[in-house]
Amino acid sequence: MASFSKSSSKAGTGVGGGGWSKAKHQAVGGGGSTLERIAQIELEISRTQKNKATAKHLGELKAKLCKLKRDLLEPSGGGGGKIAGFEVQKIGDARIGLVGFPSVGKSSLLTALTGVQSEAAAYEFTTLTCIPGVIYYNDVRIQLLDLPGLIVGASTGKGRGRQVIATAKSCDIILMVLDPTKDDSQKEMLTKELENVGIRLNRKPPDVSVRPTKGGGVKFQSTVPLNHFDEEVCVTVLKQYKIHSADVLVKEDITVDDFIDVIDGNRKYCKCIYVYNKTIDLLKLEEIDEIARRPQSVVVSVRNKWNYDYLLRRLWDEMEIVRVFTKKKGQFPDFSDPLILTPQRGNRQFNVENAVQLLHKSLLEDFKNALVWGSSVKQSPQVCGRDHILHDEDVIQIVKLTQAEKAKALHGKKTGTTIAGSNIKVDPKKKEEKAPKS
Ligand SMILES: Nc1nc2c(ncn2[C@@H]2O[C@H](COP(=O)(O)OP(=O)(O)OP(=O)(O)O)[C@@H](O)[C@H]2O)c(=O)[nH]1
Ligand SMILES: [K+]
Ligand SMILES: [Mg+2]
Image (cartoon, rainbow, N blue to C red):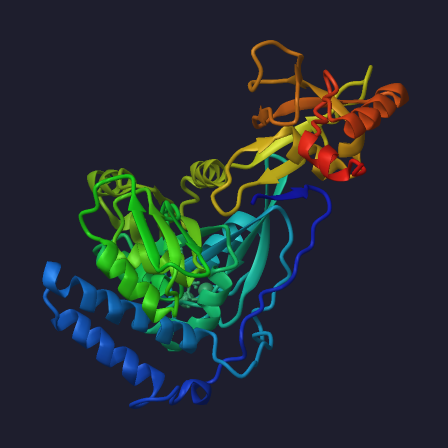
């Protein structure tokens, strides 16, 4: 499902999250606290050799680990309170979060990009809450969040880690701010902390479908050769989640971790751009060039005001926002107030129906077709139906059904026909169901 919003008016809910306290996740049963049990299982996984013979056992351990981590993050027994200093209202059409170790220049970057003053200083943990700012780009409002610095162990509650990560999970894009003079282990450590809470950076959801069934055991199928996963491991993992009957279809060469992601759910697949700031001005040109060529990486300097334009353009591209301008018959398009279609959960294409729905849901009833101008059509304007995929900066004009056409469509509904030109298709079976029995 995609999420759609109109650019001018949008206010969502704030960042929620369970009121977490260390005491709450003690002793979920069995030996020791959840943290201790997580540590035990992680140790056992690291000590277990990875091979065919141990795959099943590892799968079982990983599924257990995943459930324990979830207990840690979403403690049972309620506590759904807001996190003080972090409940920032979601505004605009996309949300970007600044994530990084302490004192890498996150706040300086927020101030540079949004004009909002977030205290910046040479000591660590200057920022203790979530500070929001807004970037206006291509007439779209983008919320940028400055967050406190993360430390290793953040996902298990160190520092303000849990709150920071919960807020990061509400973002559409993560801007990971990194120190250009340090090696890439900083990136790996932060990625791991985010992974621990179910955030997957720059990855797509695994192409796997699992449909629980009422009985008959696990029916396992794959459309590609699997090198890291098989039916036996699948059954073991499902058992951990008390799923004993299901149709499983695997369409890519997944690992057991990917499969657990699918089963456990609650994963956030998030784009990430790595931003190298601060001491970049101390490096040689060749070194800067090498960093800038890394995947998904952008080099900036707040001190020298370098490269903001490029950073914003990269963010814009990653957001894959589609702006659609509407136009009334005989009038110029309204270029001041586009419909903003924002991708979420993997859906990155928007059709005419999505746009019409955003204009007004009831408009769909009267919808006949749309005239479309722009790069999505071969000739402008082109008459398009509901399924036509729109591109950024297309213009649409909705053509409504006339009263006579509507009446005809309604009549067609009764007799199971389709109105030419309109997209009102009627299922003849439904007609049969409704037809009086004689
Ligand atoms: N040389 C240089 N220093 C910078 C740059 N950007 C920020 N700094 C300095 O780095 C220090 C830390 O910056 P902050 O913006 O407070 O960093 P932060 O990541 O928000 O820090 P915490 O909130 O403590 O996690 C400050 O002294 C800034 O002046 C830059 O581009 N070049
Ligand atoms: K700082
Ligand atoms: Mg800061």
